[in-house]
Image 1 (cartoon, helix red, strand yellow):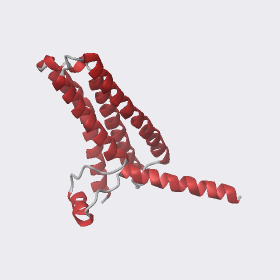
Image 2: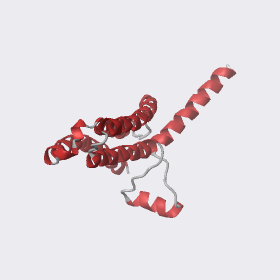
Image 3: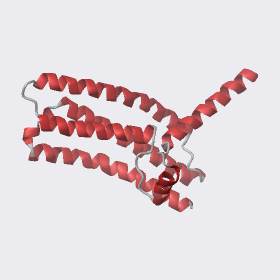
Image 4: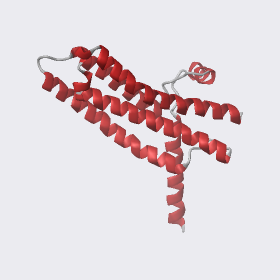
Length: 185
């Protein structure tokens, strides 16, 4: 069982790292192949790409931390310091999402009336993908890529809470317990 979980965590963190590395040359190739998209001139493209890359990096860090914890302590419970760091990133990510919406508005204003419509569509797709990754990591699991996940979905007819969200709830309970214990002393 430990080996299965370790393999799954390795698959998850390496997949996120591969995506981080892969999006950079793909972006360059798209810009080179379709210069009329003006991707590299769109601020919304850069903000969306950076947001996606940061989220993938955070996901990779999360899964890697869980795997290392499993290897060291024989438990895949995420270390408290990792959960706290990711909780801070959750707020930063939310700020970047709001900023990205404003940057899209600036791009539309800046390029008026000669919008690079298809470039804005690509940027919008990238942004939506990043927001879905944000939801997938921090709130609800949106990716169901193995048998047990699909079985859960069919059996319960609802999305699972993300692993990170469960860790946030665990830390909240630890913090509440610590405060109550401190007040009793």
